[in-house]
Amino acid sequence: MQSVLLETPAGITARLGWDPKLSDHDRKRVLAKEIVATKLGVDPKDVRVEREAPRTFGFHTQLIAEVGGAEVPLKIRNVNFRAATVVAVADADASLGLDLRDAHPDDAELHLMKRHSHLLDENDLDKLLAHWTRVQAVRDADGRGARVAADHVRLDSPLTKGWIPDRKVFYKLADLSRDSWIITLAYTQAPA
Image 1 (cartoon, rainbow, N blue to C red):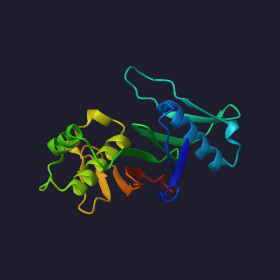
Image 2 (image 1 turned 120 degrees about the vertical axis):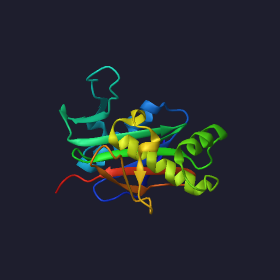
Image 3 (image 1 turned 30 degrees about the vertical axis):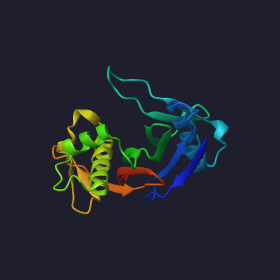
C-alpha cells in the first residue's frame, strides 16, 4: 500500500493511504500501526491494532492500539472513501474528526451537499466542498455523526472553526488535502 504523511497541527499525526486491493479494515490498521510505531519508537510488528468492544447497540467502535498487551493512551480516528483511507492519531484527551472525499463529486453527492449547505452561491464547487467537508469533520469529531443534522453545524467565516450549538466545544479546522483528495481535520487539543 502506498501512503503519505500529511501536514497536520502539532500533536496530531495523519497518513493518507490507498490501495484498491486492500479492504478498508486492512488499510486503516496498517496506517494506524505505522503511525503508532513511529510515535512510540517501536517496531510496527510490536503494535496490535484492534477495534474496541461495543458498549451498547449502535455504538460505533474506534480503533485502539496495544503494545506488549497494554493499551496505548492514544486516540485513533479514521475515514475511508473508495480505495483511500486517512488515519489520524493524537493524545487520548484530544477530540478528532475527519472527512475524506474526491475533489470531483458525482451528481448525487453534489445534490446532497447543496440541499444541506445553505450557502448563498451553491454553484461555486470549491466553496461548496470546503464548507461541506468541514461540516462533516465537525460531525465526526462531535461523536454523534448522522444524529446531528448537517444544517446544525456552524462554521466561522474563514472556515477555521466549527461547532454545534447545543455543545460548548469549538473545533479547530485544518485542511489536509492532498492530490485529488479533499481531507479535513476537526480537532481540539488536549488541555495543557
